[in-house]
Image 1: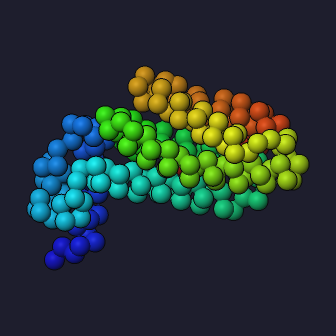
Image 2: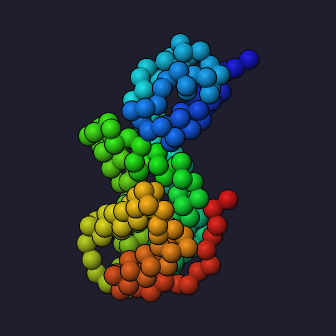
Image 3: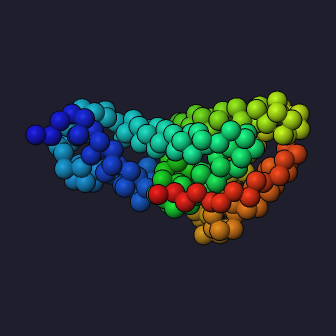
Length: 203
């Protein structure tokens, strides 16, 4: 028997695929119903509108990405190394998961301000994580004094623009080409040097 939890998960999985392929505007709820193998009533029971479903998918994927970053940096104590790993994890994860990147970055533009507000809320989680480690780096003397609130959002902006350009043009490839340059630019910008850590490939 299909439980409410299983039904919701199947709807979310189907919605990820449809939204990633078609974008918000062109995505059809009927297609998501077929992909999830649920009734239309079942879909609307969990998600009363297409907008609520899209935002639920964004929240889910954003939370998973932040958790992946937290897990990747958890065993490292050096704040500069943690920053390097965080950058690497974001670009490696999204660079290997084009659908995920499209959903979080571009597929909701037709929604206007509602999408931008949701995107900013998700990005703020990443910026907060970066800020915490910038604060530690400054405290430890591993980075120059700075306004870590401003700098953390500048870092997020650099990653965002790199990924959006890749999604639209295919270049630069985030991991192979962009990652080393972003690491050097952003870390040297705070008075630190990359640690030369081996890349942790996203599973």
